[in-house]
Length: 355
Image (cartoon, rainbow, N blue to C red; front, side, top):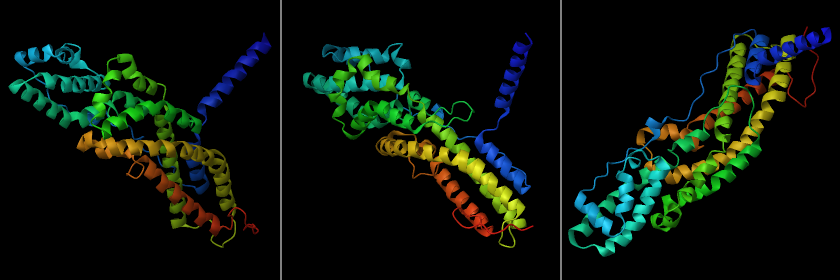
């Protein structure tokens, strides 16, 4: 009985220690601040994928009078139009709205040949308006959709950088969706060519359903931003210390310089650097794909939201990726100055420390 009680106490203590452990980015900044005798800065909040009201493109209202509806009914297009004007049609999700537009485009082409006069002119005008609004419909169903937004959910706060293999799996799941989006964006005739797939809701929505298995980008960007904040904080701490008094004023290692170097080797070299390498290996191919998608789909995105969207999709735009690269380079330069001054650069002979 006593043994069982003791084991329970030990388990509770182990859990307590585990729960109180700092995530590596915070531990790195905290220990470095302690070694430099400075206050550790608080990390900024994580940047999130834009909300729907910002990223969703506005679509024009669609109105069809009764006589026009009856003329379309005669050539089989009225049933498609009726779905849109019904109770369920008014609350269509964006991928379903895109499916409707593909079916309408295919049916309207055949319907035009059977109409004459004003009826034909009215339908031709409606098709022209739909073609003008097609980029916004496509945007809402792809990069502006709730399904795509779910990929970028930041996830829990615990430190668990995603394996780069998850990026490969995410790209495989994305491939059918990506192909369809690019075809629809680059080839107007593809809207009619995809009519067969659009007849089956299951076949049409399969590429979007595949996205439900993907969570890599959100996790990767959340960890990338936490790493970025740690790198920025560490560089700022080193610069603040150097501005007051150099760690190694005589150009030789000091006790404090050695302590700071130990923090660098343990908390950065052993913990953060491997995570940075993994995130770079995973995010670079993902960003190459999203940059291509953004290039062909952004014409339909709301103008006011393009900067916030490009921040996550286009690696050349100001955003988490560019900020990370800048923080990584500034962090490297700050440590090179400090370690060079203290003659503690890796691979070089170390002189005797100052007393």
